[in-house]
Length: 360
Ligand code: PEP
Ligand code: MN
Image 1 (cartoon, rainbow, N blue to C red):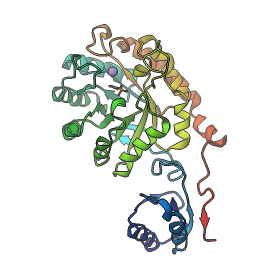
Image 2 (cartoon, rainbow, N blue to C red; image 1 turned 180 degrees about the vertical axis):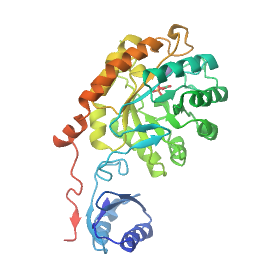
Image 3 (cartoon, helix red, strand yellow; image 1 turned 90 degrees about the vertical axis):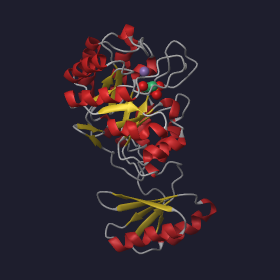
Image 4 (cartoon, protein in one colour; image 1 turned 60 degrees about the horizontal axis):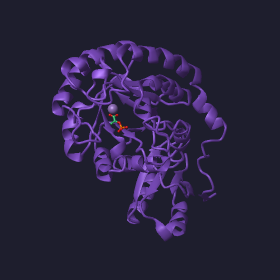
C-alpha cells in the first residue's frame, strides 16, 4: 500500500508515519514528488491490510492510503509517476534522449576494444559496452578476459569519455567489476539470481537488468524490485528477446514490452536487438523498431571484424554498419519523442491515488 501525504504535511508528520510503519515490522520507502510525499509500505502485510490501512489513514498529515494490487511497488508508476533519469558521466538515460550503448560482445584484446570504442564514439554512441566475464552456454567457449578486459575498458573510457557497461555474473566479482564499470549489467541468465540482485542493490553504481528469456514482464519488474528495495534506485531495464516457438531468430524481440513497461514503471527501458535476433542483418530493423515504440536506448554489439569474433560472431555489426544504424535510428527517435506522452493520454498509466482510503 502507499500512504499519500497531504501537500501540507510537515517533516514531523512524515516521520511519524514512517515510524508507525517500522513499528509494524514493515519498511517505509518515501518518494518526494513535485507536490507531495508518497510512502510505500513494503513487507509482508497479509491479513493485517484493512487494519493497517485504517490505522495509517488516521495519522496526522495523511491524505489517503491506497492499496496496491500489483506485486511490484517501488518500481511502479503509481508510487513514482515521474520517469527515473539516470546520470552517469556525460550520459543521461531516461530523460527523453536516446542512449546508444555499443561495443563488442566480449573484450578480446586492447586493440579490438580501442578501435571499436573510437569508432562507436565517433558515430554517436553514448555508452561503451564490452563483456569481461562472459556467460556462455558452453563451458568450452571463450569465457572473457576477466580483469584484463576491465582494465582495457577503463582505458577506453579515458580515451573516449564514454561510460562503460559490463556484466557482473556473480556476487564475488562485484567489487572488482564495480571498481571499473560505470553501469553494472545483470544478464538474462541471472535475472532471477536474487542474491546477486540484492548485492547490486547495495551498490551505488547504476544497474542495467536484462529480461530473462523465459521471464514475464511482471517477473522482470519483480527482479528490478529486488534491486530497488535493497537501496539502489538507479535501475534500467533491457528487453533482449524471449524464447518462443520461433527458431529462425535467436529469440523473439518483444516490442510490446517497451510501451507496456513504460506504462507500468518509471524505470528507463532499453532494447538489445543483437541478442534478440542473433542475426546481423536484423539488428538495424529491430533497433529502428525498438526506438519507434519508445525505447530510451539501444544496446548493440559492434566488432571491427565480426566474422572473427570469439563470441556472437553472427550478430555483431562491423563499424560502418553501426554508423548506418545510427543514421537510421536518430531520425526515428526525433519523430517519436512525444509517443510516451501519447500513451499516457490514452490512459495506459493508472491514476495515482486510485480507490484509496481517504480521511477526508
Ligand atoms: C550481453 O549483453 O553480453 C549478454 C550476454 O546478453 P544477455 O544476458 O541478454 O544474453
Ligand atoms: Mn553477446
